[in-house]
Length: 345
Image 1 (cartoon, rainbow, N blue to C red):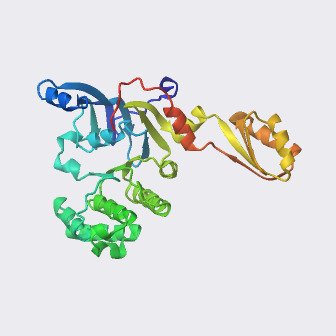
Image 2: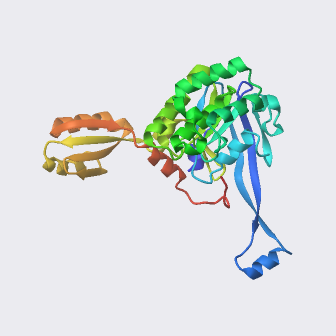
Image 3: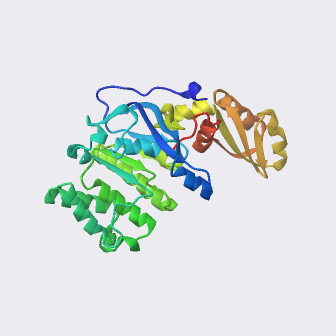
């Protein structure tokens, strides 16, 4: 499967994020359960190598919002941590804005931001505003710039009264908005988002998506986004990079990925008469019927002709044509046996 769908991203000196042959291998201690094994491990330790990221290569250019997809343990978070300078790679190299991330130069750290949905940067015992002021000092943000940026973020994220509440008293969605604000006060040119909508309700997910899109439009920031919510990806990203068991599977257009993996359309029907459902099998081998509702699968190239035949021969109240859910595309992409000896996120 990977050989069939893998494509190469565009490389070039103008890329703001450039990754070539990036790999990360962890050396993990192995110990069987039991007291005897615990004592033996004090004298003879056994290790195994876990390949978290293997020979990953892609470029991201200024202003792009790129979805970084993969199941749990695929290597997404490890890759983001290397790009943010939190981890050193085992091999390969990367540059972000011309800097080598793991050298952690001050100029680089002032130009990027990493937001992780399952990690907190705000102090729980003080109001969010106090943490913002700490960030102002850390990033040496001029007072006028800090006020202007904060006012914009308060408006965009509707922070309002949240600024003066202790962080522990905020809901998950409210805290996530404050986390985003804290990460953007220094106006980063590159933003790494790792599950920014994790655990928040559907309404808040939508608001965070709209905010990320607006921030990208206003500032031209480059965004690399990981998410298990495909609605985040379809709303924000035209291009996706897919990684599985540490290896790059696909880099390209999201719609093209769907075309290559599931080359069919879904035809959804509301029927006038349930008896008409019995005749649908002549239009497609794949038919699902529930009362007066039916769904057919048709090859993309044959969809217009199939729709015309249905409308000419069957009494239909309503008809819609849809692409397969992107979740199905991604699930099929990852449905292959593990031959990589394990991986880590």
